[in-house]
Length: 403
Image (tube, rainbow, N blue to C red; front, side, top):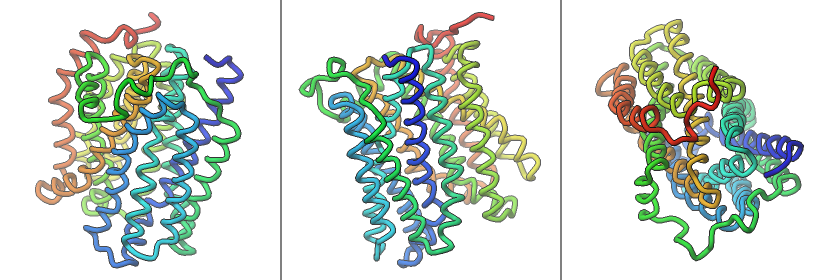
């Protein structure tokens, strides 16, 4: 384990790398449909282009996480970031819809390296520092997603390809930071034997889901992500058709949610985890998200929406920090990357299906449909969550400090 000064340096570099990567991802979000339209893509093809990124990340996250358990974290981050630079550059140079798809699939696959970054945190923190570590990583994630779309909109005034080149520059800066300043954190003696098991397979996925504690955390990640991904992917349609808001106002609302989550992850979650324990907070965040999504379903004004987004951001910020922290605590050191990869893959899987299914609920049931569906999914999951996080939690997820 690194000493205090090394930890601060590694945290700072990992924060910067994550921020730059997510900012690069966020830059192209607002221009994707318009850029694709230049090459003849309609709404359906644009939706597939957006979904192709998540589908590729679904494949990449468990692969790179598992490989990092065998070969170390640093080499995997370097190799994948090189290809992210290439993918973003190719996206700007693309002269056809086929090349747009190819570049997004490459970039999405390589951005499966988020599982490696999450494993880094486990390597450099003690168990009682884990919530703070993942909170810092989550804050970098959120800041990148808030700043990226704003920068993308600005760069697109010089052409949509400029946003892609901007993403490539940010990825290149991330590569420099990793290569020159980020050390290896998984010692050779702690690495997984290369012949121990396949890198990733459906058998490995089933085995992970059936594990007593890790399996419960992974299942919780999946069902929570179904509800939250539907909210995130149809929110713009909801504000456009339900509240008649402009794209600019919708972007400000999403930035509002993002900033709230950054504040929660960066300054609040670790303190709450000490007081309540991670297991209880995970359960409370699921319950709070269910209530928030129910409230969102019936929010028909800016004022009510702003109010309901506060507990929604609180629930999302707590959950997304502690789900990774909790998973790292029940995992062995040489399997952290693999389990983080499976967790990221399950979350990506929900983002593949959420846009089309959320749009269907909105069209068929009305504005309340996506919110009620998401709330219902979590409400039905609450008994399972109570059993595993309140009644019979892993010892590491219990309260650390009595007050």
